[in-house]
Image (cartoon, rainbow, N blue to C red; front, side, top):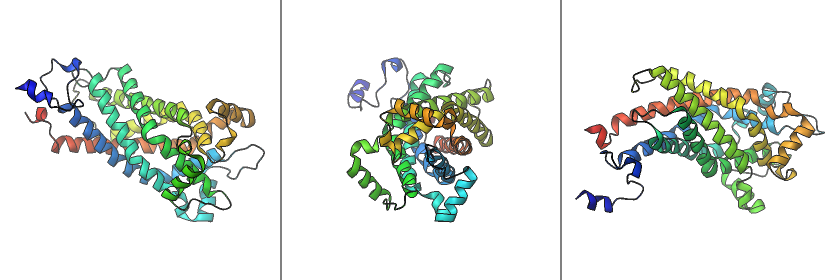
Length: 324
């Protein structure tokens, strides 16, 4: 009877050979992944609405090159002042629609992928070994880079960069997408894929590693112990800070490759060499202060929201194993 039922089960829901000896229902792992996708999507939409102005300032500072042209901004505060003076408060939210459209699937892919990888690599107590924490985070980052982040970031950078031109020609999200596709083709939406994969992969490897390690430390012997929301926020801020200092140079290169002046660079390596040659090594850490403030807040908020939604889903969305 069980064999017949398994024969009509979707291959995505069947147990892997490693789980053949388990007596858990085959749909349990998928339920965990679906919870992660749903909680991640909600988290992404709420988080970006809170933190977008710092992302805007960071991007403007990274695009503000030194190469023979006087810098437009003297720093983060000046960037805010100039933007508000020229475009009003709404100017700090230029490009928000692009990130909002992208942040929901990005966060859904990230957390869904992490939960999917975790279910295969976690031990019997549900805890990941240190190297598996890195692998799960790396895999989640690569997945989100390919399926969500690269096109979203490319359009976002072009929108923000377009605002500084004498005659902005992007009238909105869909008009901008159509113009980019018309002028540059599909490639125009996937500029900077390589550095984005490196950035997102390293980002999530560091963040999930730090977060999972700190949570495991806090729980001690009781692995089912709930970590308080504020403590999760503190752990998230720490994880975010680690990732900022670890890969801001990659973020700068990615931003340049996705800007309106990306034609100046042959590839990722050429972009890095030109930045070093014309602007010096310090240019690789342009925008670190606003990025640090954004990312620490971003990651703290993200993990707090995600943890609470996952806790809520686990209370109201019981799998068959949990209900027994």
